[in-house]
Length: 427
Ligand code: MLT
Image (cartoon, rainbow, N blue to C red; front, side):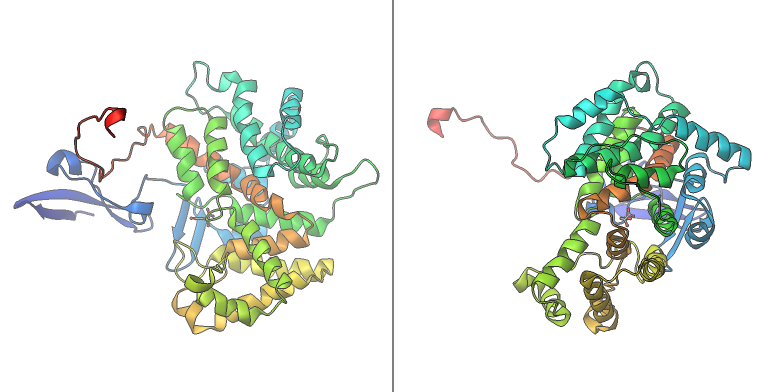
């Protein structure tokens, strides 16, 4: 694009190049703005700021398009396995059979977690939220693998494989801890998803066999969560990693960012909101009205609308269908799920929600499906983290390989001007 953007300020004109992405997203390149003009930009919440160039995920919020490395999310969810998608995101291409076997076998061989981490786990209170445990133990991994930061700034596969292999183990341990149940060790004859389900649900007192309906649903859910370009947690991972912090520390920061109720924590909030409606008598219309008058009622609808999708979230469409399939296959009959359907119907047909583009998003349906699969509410955001891990890794790797400079935003200072120190006795 040969265009240049002209800016006139304080009577002077400046020219800035424009650029266009491979899917025609247009941008002004303002890298030299402050040097040239003395001005910076203000964009709270980064609604207009392209923080980086990335070749991983393409998202068009107006048209509801999501693609990983050029492949549509619809195709990947229907045809791929989660580990295939992880390989695609991290290494840029779909794996050949040989590449896939090597990747999968490497992950299988690294599922065991150092017993020292188990001792760390035992130090947490029983009621610790699994997300807090997960972030702490992932951060702790750099202490167990000092080769991740000692004299190296590389993006070696070693740490990538360790993280992919051990996160499900740690995640299920965080849950077992919250239940006061013994942890399960991984079984490397099982595949990635079966192994997770085994560690999550097996008990020493009875046999556990993985239900293929549950494994298939989980595969889809993890794929749908695997990356979402520069969202809050991914931006956090890239920002932390840009200081040359190791992969474990960067991912741990991403997990903490994900936990917030405005990000991945929304899936837990959705089910808690549905439980609140159930406890309040289950009158959906009443709560729809309360949501419309949120300023006075304080009632907030979680799981509706999205910062970048303007019409619908393509992941939500896929999950909604998967939820219907899974619920009928498993024969689940849960009053909370009926309330969810009522809420969805009201929101999709009510002018208030339509005009504000408040349609159910991925977090609305994922909570419903996790619940039907038997995943407890406090594990919903942990499931999101397991799904998002390959995306975080891919983005961290890209950031390091393209030698991105340390992230360091500017600010517009609005505090006091210079004032004289006043001794305490005179204040
Ligand atoms: C995500 O998948 O990360 C969420 O939808 C949030 C976002 O993209 O901003």
